[in-house]
Image (cartoon, rainbow, N blue to C red; front, side, top):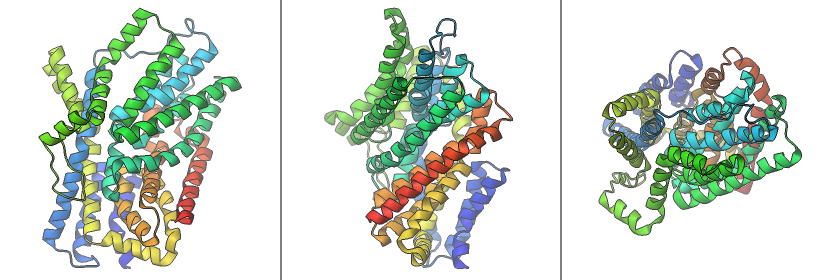
Length: 487
């Protein structure tokens, strides 16, 4: 009975989201309201109002650290993109070569899409992908699948904000968690590439074996570059720094532009080039890094991330948007884009605060630990096998890894410690399960359908995706078994 009571906050959130009647913010509010009495009156150890207030403050601090990534990324992207026509593909008459069309498809799905998603989150990667491949005149059902494939590197999406949040819950450094996440992400990429190849074949975008090998080689190089950038720079700027040069190289190799075309493309990309160069410099130039860190370093909680505003990537995203507004003399445009960014990102911002407060209250009251103890006493080491299913299913429902991370990560940490398992590996498994399986979320499917003019075809796309979803869950369960066996 007590375990059921401790599960009430999570069950409340699940029921609210599954009902389809409320958004993520309302679901998080209901979860937090359920958390308060459970933490105060059903905790396994004494937990009073001052302790609850302290736990809620810790959750607010976590939300404060994450919010600039979300809002800043959206604002910068919109300021950089306003008034510019998106660069699409040439029409088929100008570019009839099937291999060129196929290469554009790969470029849109696996380079531009993840780059846009890393800079902003919120499905902007799907928008960039669909805009590029629209001139290929594909069927809506196929376009929907290709749009979803832009979401395959979500642990680095929205400036890695989800990974930073997961690291705070797991008490694992963000870079370490992201590097441990590379293994399951790379294995899942086998599933996503198979989905891409099958969909392209069905869409009539045929390619010889040599082109398939070229695509696999580019994907391997992209993941290797991402891993190296993550180790050097951390998850916030890793994908931007790794994929920015790769996009340029791929553009030059595929399009072979003349000087005028290359210069025009460089001008369009200038805001991103300057931003990425500056963010990389703040991480790699030792004197600059130390100087900016010394200007402000707020650490109210020893076990939670610090706030260094002059090193925070979100701060520089906002600063970049302000600089563009000043350069363009566009105060009115800045205000309009700020309102648009808030309207797009408000549910994500609010839910980050609310879920973080829930997680800290449950952990502070000892409920997460007790819940993990109960599971461990029943299933022992094999309890870890449950978490990919829980996190993956919840990620599909919530369209975000933040909810499963906040609800299950404290218990996952306790389980790993009790079983003597690798904490970073167990945390990365939960994190990747919750974030990567969101590709099958009804919310993302709805966005993809709207962009591809495929309303009403969602069910058919789900039928096509089902074998790949089962394969992805199989990989995650296999990794969970490996974590247990390896100890």
